[in-house]
Amino acid sequence: MRTYAGIPQEYAQAEKAKIVLLPVPYDGTSTWGKGADKGPEAFLQASENMELYDIETESEVYKQGIYLADPITENSSPEEMVAAVHKEVKENIKRNKFVTTFGGEHSVSIGAIRAFNETFDNLTVLQLDAHADLRESYDGSKCNHACALYEANQTTNLVQVGIRSMDAIEKTVMNEDNVFFAHEMVNDEYWSDTAIEAMTDNVYITIDLDAFDPSILPATGTPEPGGLFWYETLDFLRHVFKEKNVVGFDIMELCPNAHSKPSDFAAAKLYYKLLSYKFEQQDADDEYEMTGLQEKSKKVNSEEDDYNEY
Image (cartoon, rainbow, N blue to C red; front, side, top):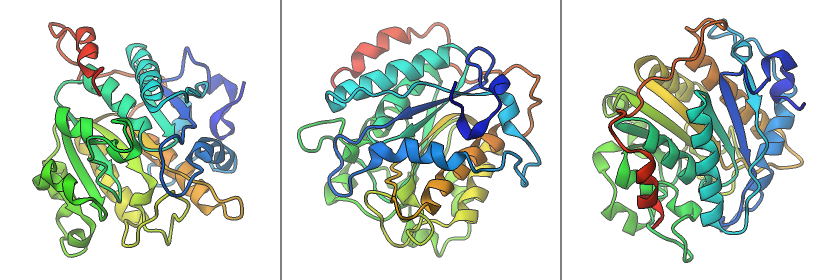
């Protein structure tokens, strides 16, 4: 059995693990730097050299159990990939797992967000990204990486952080009250508090690694100058986890460079940090309690057909 970060097998069993890590090596619609399909493997390789004790939270989150699922390899079309991700994520949510996804290009998030939105009440999607990703369609598909957050913008409370690149058409659908542009964040010491205030109780986090400044994480398909830095981002995310019910997350768009490994390691460290923040107050022996689910009276399954148009 292969494990994440060399975690002992007793903490990597599907039945006992509270956390599921779902790799999706897909790169079917990216339009500039190719290689995001190699991101999950580079992330897993880097994780093998990561210490499992987190200094900041004084915890060893791997003892909560992290199951490394088989990768989703569907690549016949963007729509089929999104459907496969949606199905797998939702099945694991129903198994009472804390589901995390590692891509792959950002279109992978469409299926994951769809599954969480069908399952959790009044969902906020927190997007950390350089790009708005709000096109309704691109290159003939609504499941293009440039459309990664369009559906979430229509169906959830979308909060966007770190944005510094977009097309004019995206502004026509954007909720600017919930958008934190990078050039404005530089001069606003209260941006993180305002962003958290804009969120509902249930939060799903989607991180495109190009949200970070290329000086600390250059290995993405479309790096943009003027991005987020490491400790300010971790401080913000830790407060999100403390104040909100984070129901799941994904990390996307690692485009590894065979001659430089720091970005791979940063992605692995970021993933482990988010888990440490989620479970720092929970004893490893305690059962994972999934909260924030939609009311039983809502016919969640019947809603799936409504999304087929996307």
